[in-house]
Image (cartoon, rainbow, N blue to C red):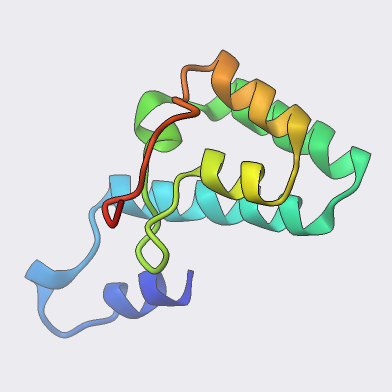
Length: 100
């Protein structure tokens, strides 16, 4: 998230993030924070966010720093309910990052 903020305050307007990129960073950050919380309540909140706001653009957005999609974070952190919700909304469980 800090990388997104830093990109927004650059003096070069052409280097600033687009609105879509900002949305992606925020959505990914919310899901990541709920993964870290690792509680049933956090899983329920994440599933609600995914169901309500999980567009193709947001599901496949790769964060600036690690270039992970939400499904990568949920799988790595073992958040099964989040993974199920992401797949139900169309996230590809076999997706890779830009780095492979």
